[in-house]
Image (cartoon, rainbow over all chains, first blue to last red; front, side, top):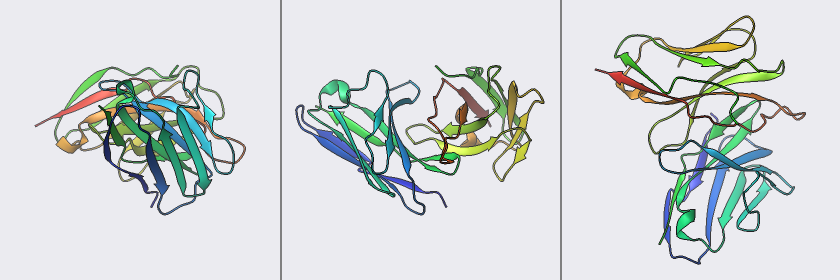
Length: 113
Length: 114
């Protein structure tokens, strides 16, 4: 149990376009999900906390208007990277809370040309 | 900032036990110790967590010192597939019982040698 999926696994887009990444908890409900970003050879950096039915809480330095988060149901959170630029190219990973444990998705590799 | 300190890298022979240390001297009474690992280009995988007592599951054992200021993750029989970055994280749960945010440090790169 405790499986989290992400879609797509890999996406390439042109500069200036928007990209939506989905995070789903497949076999449990999660009132809280989290979004992370990881650059090459670096650790995971928390971007925001997503709570079902309410606005996301963003970490310091993360632009909320650029990284739109929607947590419309107990099994789905989405991250939309708006007006993507090459510096947004990264590995985006979500997690979902089940009890006191977070379970992570497999990640989405975003490349902005 | 991460609240834990881990060695940057460790080697282990295949088939032997891997003992990964972690210092968390500023841990609060309501904070759990979590261990995750990340294999290259994948999402982190949950391994184990504990509060005060030692814990064991099918993947590993977690030994927490009595003062809770440090812990050790033990992989009893390391295989080549256990080569990964191992993260030790401390975090509390919120009022709803869900885990609070996890702040990742740089972890320990465990290299299992054949």
